[in-house]
Structures are given as C-alpha cells and as structure tokens.
Image (cartoon, rainbow, N blue to C red; front, side, top):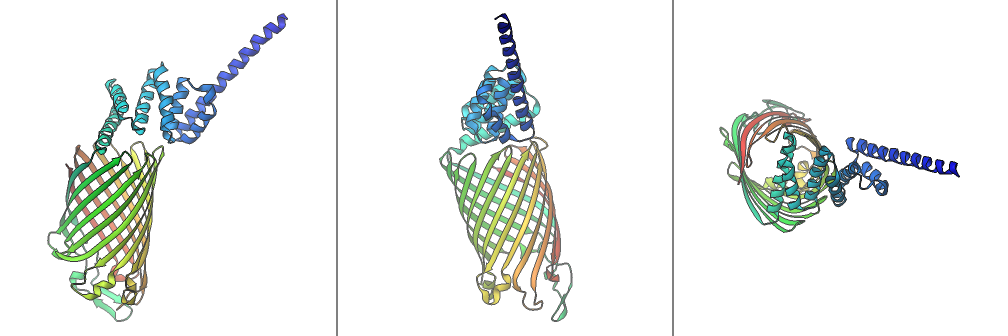
Length: 445
C-alpha cells in the first residue's frame, strides 16, 4: 500500500511534466508558423488545442493573431482581449493591445479601436509603431466620414518632356513589300515636345449602409503640347459605380462614358460597362478580377471612313497584391479583344492583345514612397493591313517606369516619374520608342 501511494504521485508528476512540454511545443509551433506567414496553419493548430490551452496568455496572443490574419476577426477579438487583460509581460501586453485594436477596426468597432490605439500611442512606442498607429487613426476617421455622403475635388497637374508625343517611327523612309520605299511626311514621324497635363476630378460618395454605396466621378483631362497643337487632347470621362460586399470581399459594378477631343475637334466616344471583385485573404494578400465591355466610336464629321475604326472591346484582368512590411508587390495579367463594328473594310482594325505588368512600391517612411513598374504586351490584328503592306500587323511592347511619391501634407502629394517604352512591329511604320519624364502635384479638397 505504501508503494502504491508513492507511485501515484510520481506518475501524476510525470504526466503533468509531459503535459507542460506538449503545451510548450504547440505554442512554439504556432509561433514558427506565424513567423513564416502561415497564418491559416497556425489557426488550425490553435483550434486543435483550444480546450487545453485557452487562457494561457502567449497561446491566446498567437491564436488571436492567427485568427485575425485568417479572416476570423471576431475570434481574434476574444483571444486578444484575454491576452491583453492577463499577460504580465509588458511587451506581449502592448503587442496584444495593438493587434486587439486592429481587430476592433476590422470588426468596425471604431470607438474601441481608436481608444486602444491612443492608449498605446500614449506609452511612447517606437517610431515605426507610432507611424502605423497614426495611419490607422486616419483610416478610422476616413471610415467614419464614409458613413456619411461626401464630396471631394482633386486637382493634379504635371509638367514634362515627351520624346515621342505621337508614338511614331523615327524613320523617314519605310520599306513596303508592294511599292518599295516610301518617304514619310515629317508630321508622320516621331515628334518631341514639352507638355503640361492637368486633371480635375469631382467625386461624390453616397453610402446606403456600411457595406453598400454609390459613387459618381467626373474627370476632365487636358494635355497641352507646347509646340505641336495637333496632338493636344481633352478627355471628359464620367462613371457611376455601385459598391457592395464585406470586409473580405468587395464588388463593384459600373457604367462609364467618355468623350475625347483631339486639337479641339471631336475624335472618339466610349460607352462601357464594368464589374470587379477584390478579396482580402489576410496576411497582406489581396487578389482582384475585373471584366469590362466598351463600345468605342470615332467621329465621322471629317470623313465617313472613320467609322471603319469603330470597335467593341472586351477586357479581362486578374491581379494579385502582396503587402509585406514596407513593400507592396502587385502583379496583373490581362487579355483584351477588339472586334470591328464593320467587317467590310475595317477588319484590320480588330485586334486581340495579352499583357502582364508588375509594380513594386517601397514605403521609406510616412512621406516618401519610390516605385517601379514594368510591363509587356503582345498584340495581333485580325486581318492584313491595307494599302502598302498586305500583312497582318503584330506588335510587342515593353515598358518600364520609375517614380516617387512625396506626401508633403495630408492633402498634397508631390510626384515625379520617368518612363521608357519600346514597340517592335513586323510593319516598320509602327516601330517606335518613347522616353518621357514629368513632375507635378496632386491636391485634394
């Protein structure tokens, strides 16, 4: 009997020790998964051990973070509230409060989020944490304002130089298969000019509720080339969009109309329908899908043959965005098809094109964001190009752009950008390259 009394406590002690070791290994595994950005796996691990470890501060913190990044903000709130309330480790408690404030924000508990962010801000955290909190406080203000109808005006203007305002070849002589060499008029060759480009945007947002709203925008763009008026452009564009969805999924359906004048004369009109879907997967991952249908019509007042350029356009786009620390990566692929309205004589204006683009933004701090973009596009027309060439036109276009955003004030952005484009075509007339740089500002009221 004495031996039995001795063995039972010994066994209970061993069992308790093994239980503690198992708990520690679970928490360590969750920490490893979260550090690797595998939030869903960490969330699944937490769910499997919830009964045993719920109430342990470190577990609750990791569980709440994994739930928040896995799209379960309500569960995150409960877990992080426990961690923030009972943790005796100051660093963990402050981190739990920050993540809890973010969870409140995601669940639209704006007052609780604001109060908690201000509590952490009052403790004088590191500069990068302060910047993140200030950004969230601005988002909270914007979201509150978004629950009321709002009207805004934006003015943007740039000055720059364009090495090829008409995207034309630099060659004076063009070799054709039917008549040999032909000499181009200087107006049909590459033209370099300085320019100004000014944009005025009027925007109105009418929210029906937290998840539904109607937006209307009117956008006017004036491009003025200083020495060459024939390529000056005025573009008036309006769109009406219905927005709906949740924190995770957002949908937009819109109607767009635009009118383009070239050197003061009517040139082109477009009417289109579009829809898009964006999903927040958590962990800084977002994807988007969009589709649009447009009718593009050219003015016939200067010649009935302009109607042969009319096309109906279908455009499909898919995008993926990853926000990782100070870096924002965005990749897009798209495919478009433009079918001619009139096959008889206009079939060569039909075309299909496929492209891809990648951009990288780096947030140096709250004011400065440099960026770079690169894109490629392949275009093939539907029919032989008429007159001198008698072949189907095919183009390959590559472009690279680099620039800088400087947030001088909350409503004032300074911009600078330089870009290079190279277009290679199987028809010499359409070969061109283009270097362009510009600098300006954007002011919002």
